[in-house]
Length: 99
Image 1: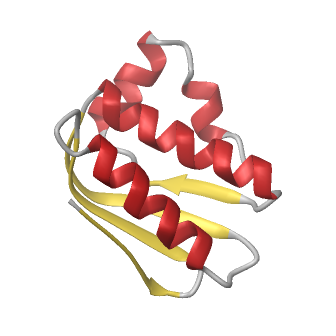
Image 2: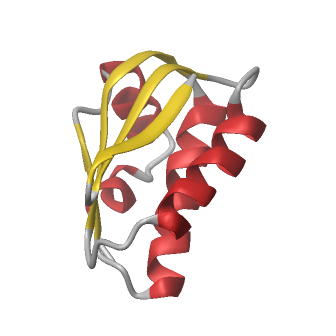
């Protein structure tokens, strides 16, 4: 799992976003979000190779961080597995929301 900001305002997430990586992903992702100088952010999940409910919880946590900081954040390229879990859990509307 890797999380970086290769260009200002674009956070790139790659690798597995699962129970095994969720704790580290949450911590690293929050540090990257906090370190960004951009006024709004895009979290690009095109590189996520596998996701589960813990990975979904990480994304929701990042969105909650953005809401607390009043920083607009948009999720892009969510893997189908995470979208399916979000729909089943009835939180898919939260993934589309921005701060």
